[in-house]
Length: 485
Ligand code: NAD
Image (cartoon, rainbow, N blue to C red):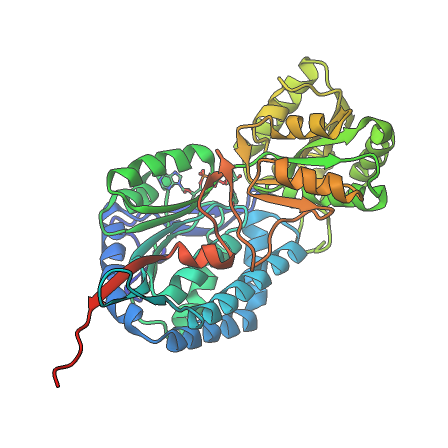
């Protein structure tokens, strides 16, 4: 019997015993099975989180922080098991799994202390002898729903601020990659977090996930995933006016001006386009290069992409550049987007197919692919490919480059490479994205807000906004009188 549900501190199988396989996308091997939570299981988990909420919210921030730090000491002690599980379920090279899990522990430690620094404000009233306090209080039970591409990290971004604020959780990890995330939560259990504060329901999004969203017991939905699912969640949450944080899809542009240092811009574009096999919400999806350096950039980028190392065994080759895609559907999207671009006149500068060799035969592999001669109507330029494909287009003026970069329904991350301060600030102001990297290919920093504009989402994670989104503000106003003599 598969016991992957954590409800009120107990590991259980689903009420009807149904389960699902978890497979290694590099070779199709079944590595585990997870329970498929029923509606009743999800209800029980929400009930447990609801019952645990008053006591957890009532603990001092110092005591919550103690448990959170203790959990991360345990997680770091057992890091090897989690990182190996992550590489097997996701396919990413081991070094990428180590980076993800280590960062996740840092996020929890950071927010444990942020919780201790929380304060409210107070002020003397404007009218009459009154005084006001503004308190911040936890929103209540949170449903945290996460995708497979960073199943530990994106959970930490929710659990860290939420637990520190005093919220309790029901987590639905992705069915494709639930194992490392479950080990992450196990560390909290081992650290003595009270039963019911953190619960896990595994199973399909359309059943377990949907029940978490629609059941009145969840008061906030913290979701990272596709825009299509996010839109559905937003509609459901609106019916009950639940709080939401939605971190959705992206189509990040990488704008290279003619004064940029190509020794930096080329490797940085390469890493952000192809690491995690292009399956990152802030992956570089579209590269725009100013005319004067287009040929040199395209040649160097293509050559470097052709030399990236794809591994069929991320445990044996921990420092490889990329592994497989997560599943057949993802691979099919990539194939369709490349075929569409070629049909409409694009050229495949490198890649454009799956790698040869028996080691790749049973996995979802696709070579790092560079497309030139691309046009705005092509699917690679309009949709989220979420795979190892980098189309390169050229622009003349920076205004034109930014207009091309903004020509997308998404607005999560954007990058610009230039050594001209005026161009850098102009781009930072005019790129329509929640995060802009100037000469840096990552917009993630624990202390800074992360999130999207347009169809890339609502709300922010990380930084202070990431903490505020787990709290309600309450204005307490009181009238006082002079004491009687
Ligand atoms: P997905 O939307 O298919 O699934 C995400 C999670 O939602 C999974 O756990 C899934 O089981 C669950 N789910 C599916 N349908 C649901 C429903 N009706 N109700 C409740 N839960 C449901 O996304 P995915 O394919 O797993 O992830 C890839 C997507 O995530 C990409 O679009 C990527 O850009 C996005 N993403 C965004 C960010 C960000 O921070 N903005 C980060 C990582 C990934």
